[in-house]
Image 1 (cartoon, rainbow, N blue to C red):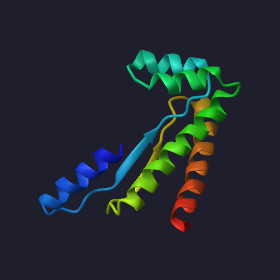
Image 2 (tube, one colour):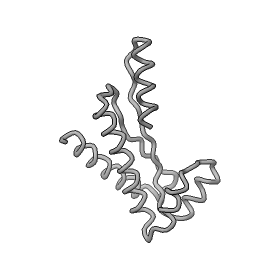
Image 3 (tube, rainbow, N blue to C red):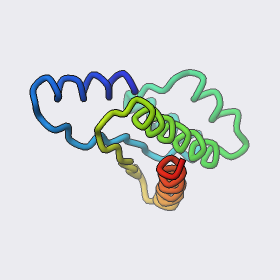
Amino acid sequence: MGRVLEDYVSKCSYRRIRPASFFVGVAPIGTHYDIDFFKWLGVEMPRGVETELIKSTDISSAFKTLATKVFSEVLNFVKDMDIRVEVAPNVGSISSANLERACKIVTAIKDGIEKVRTS
């Protein structure tokens, strides 16, 4: 994702336009059914990620940890590379059963943002 951000900001700079905000989209996964549904929709996830989630005793918690880690890595990359673009989370729930999970992910990402900003 870092390379995409670098290329995006570079192209904006070349065209002398201000980069728009970059949103990192996340949809909560809390059960095996969610994984199967995403696959049915055509969503591809790295095999290692899928395996890690399936082997977890708590898929929801494992996904929240993973989503927070990925978002923090993106923020740290932007900060370390001094890329001038706003990065924000976009957490969407595909069912009402996942609304609470979505709220927990937003809170975890928000806490991660604060850690990156203060480091």
